[in-house]
Image (cartoon, rainbow, N blue to C red; front, side, top):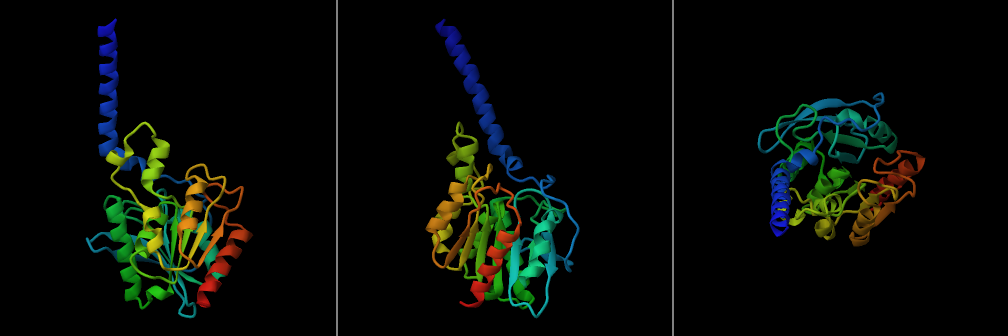
Length: 269
């Protein structure tokens, strides 16, 4: 009986260790989904040009740039962990009504771009995007960083290093480690996880005005994470926490009004 128990435990431990090794080496395939289309497809209703942004490590990133010199603010849109630029059209269609320019960049490994996504690499992509925009004559105090889901971790990192006109976080998480512990409570996430995106640790370093939007019915990133980031964020700050919105927030009249009010407030600072 004891031999059988030891044998069974050995098998279970062996399977567990193999699973740990698999998760250690292949975890990014569970974090980044370039080919997944989980957004509404809709018709483009804005003017833009497709541009190529070369990163500091020589990766060319596909981006859409919409610019009118009469508009003072430029939204720099950092998208989430799934899909490509086309999957954000239903959001971008509203930006023309916000009286802003925008630049949305597709991460390496997404939208046909070369390279592999990782925390370090996406920070390089984001910082290279900011430098590209500065090269076009747009200053940081004219840029509003907009992070969507995974993109919130990147927006917080960039904003923790420099001051911008503003920061918008949609469906943000406290850290990818916290997300990992939620999804895989039986794994030693602190040891295994490569890409940590420690937003909660960095939020106090963000000195730009901030708007945090998070649906209370979010079934992917728990609402408490967005609320915790808001509580820790510096003033001036604003929030939009609709009760029924899921992870993919409804781009309805109330959300658009919230964005307009926030952007207008930046002009008065």
